[in-house]
Length: 292
Image (cartoon, rainbow, N blue to C red):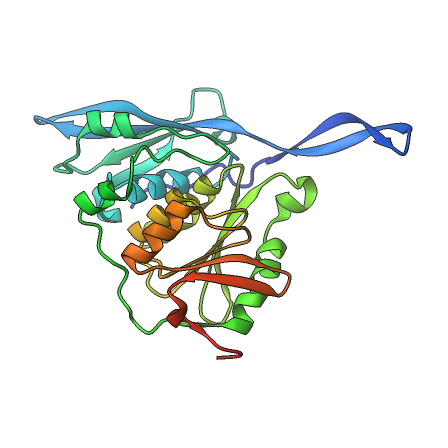
């Protein structure tokens, strides 16, 4: 798959003048804010022997890992089934500007990739806070014949799970400065970090880590645990299912629909993974007692 992310290194933090009010005292100072900007994904494809291009999707995101985000989004939303269907992926860089100034990614699909553009446009809507997947219920996944995550023996010890929230926090440089970003990370069964991304939206962070694996030819991902900051939603579980990730954990609680999806498709679901505790909501067999 061609294309390299020219936006890294990139500025993800901006300073802001503030007045700090503490115990009746007001002090002037500066604060650090996480940058939020739109990203447009343009899709180039062949119809009736002619290549055309459409603006497919716009999301608010934290700049950086844009190509991973675009690739991960197309994969988790079933626009593509494998990295081989992407001919090229790159930033659309206007003349006289640098890649760091670009908020548009172009994805060229290989000839013969079949998809319904009208359906995609109806389903795609996202906000930076939580994301809206556009699927009315679990029935959409059932209709699309989404496979269950197989039981392949992948297990993680309780002691490893307890260590993950600290490992995630240590991998969030922008969060440490701003306190204003979500994160998603992949870990192996020994708690070794296999990939991490920060973003103003959890769904974008998940697309970034899955997209990085996709672009490296490592999907499906049957031997990793996905940890997200905040809560786990239906959309987070849907993306994990697309990548066949067997364990999804979150610092916060799951939503009811996330739990329903996990149970139906065989995903182990953990919540409140922090401060030496966690809850198992589904798939307890993948969590080994004690040190394993």
